[in-house]
Amino acid sequence: MTQAVLILIKPDGLKKSLTGNILTRLSETKLEIVAAKMVRVSQALAEEHYKQLKDKPFFPELIGYIRGELHDRKKVMALVYWGKDAIKKCRELAGATNPEEAESTSIRGSYGRITTSGVYENVIHVSSNESEAEREIKLWFQPEEIIVNLFSVKSEIEKECKKVTWA
Ligand code: IDP
Ligand code: MG
Image 1 (cartoon, rainbow, N blue to C red):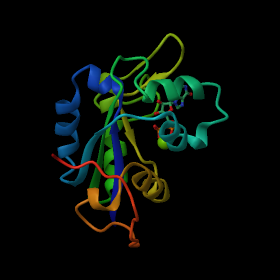
Image 2 (tube, rainbow, N blue to C red; image 1 turned 180 degrees about the vertical axis):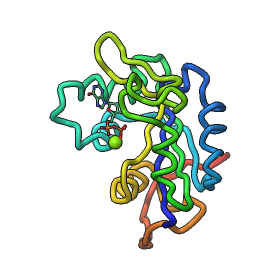
Image 3 (cartoon, rainbow, N blue to C red; image 1 turned 30 degrees about the vertical axis):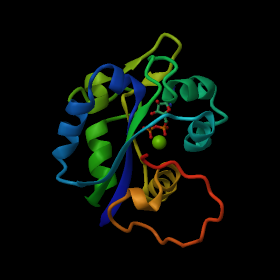
């Protein structure tokens, strides 16, 4: 089954200079990268991304974590991987949510940790199923930022819209 999956390299992954390692590990999947960018994560984007967890006691710390407040790196790297069984392949490589329980050879098992305040710093986000992947990809990317047509689109004419371009 050809699927798309949202991957985020979280602020701890960036701070620990793990981008190259993580992308190398993910390349084992032979999936195609169809979108990639650096993002400053607003409060609204963070809360929408993790909205299923809003009632959890760790939610405020989680929002601070993904916004980079714990790591002096106020950015994440967002990518879309695309190909056969993309979600299963990427989640297997990522490992379990709790880095202490993740297989030691997985990305989270190799590089994750639990902070003293109890946040799972697990260096990478991977969408958990197809509907979550669609919701998350549409949240993080605009259609023109993705080099394949993943989901249906609509066109509209923007009026009087300020746009910044190269001078
Ligand atoms: P996932 O990232 O493996 O899909 P989710 O349950 O969607 O796991 O949780 C999102 C993120 O919230 C996790 O990656 C982790 O950073 C954090 N998290 C999840 N459960 C806990 C917990 O019980 N304690 C602390 N942090 C957690
Ligand atoms: Mg999840």
